[in-house]
Length: 153
Image 1 (cartoon, rainbow, N blue to C red):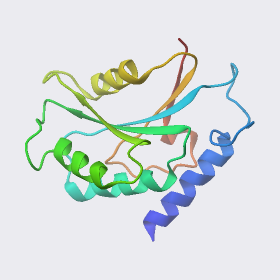
Image 2 (image 1 turned 180 degrees about the horizontal axis):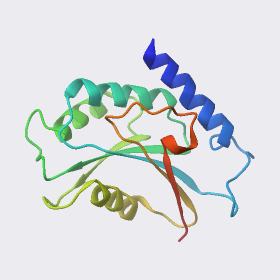
Image 3 (image 1 turned 90 degrees about the vertical axis):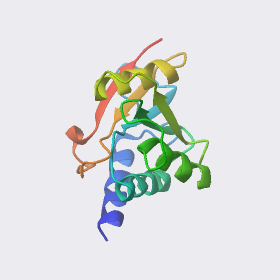
């Protein structure tokens, strides 16, 4: 039941900001070329990672891409966040909208994972980035639940 309430809350958030529909209201500063959700993952439980992937696979849209970012701090061994996400995404039908990026340095923190993802996926034009913690339970109707950053080329 909690999963469906969260899904409905995320849909309300997306509808409110109009980021998924053509001709929708745009954030201040003009139109955006792409919307990227970043989910840094480090040493999380399998069930939590799988629930998060399931959650975002239900709301993924063609102009929104979700990246799960793992770190070399944890490694890529069986049972690691990297291997769990790889397995789950390989079985997903939305592999074009859900992706895995690996931050290959052992030093660094969550911010380094986020910056690595931004540097890796930022294309030309404006990109709207959102950061979501895999281990939190945010109210997706609240503006503070997701950190949105606008980047221009």
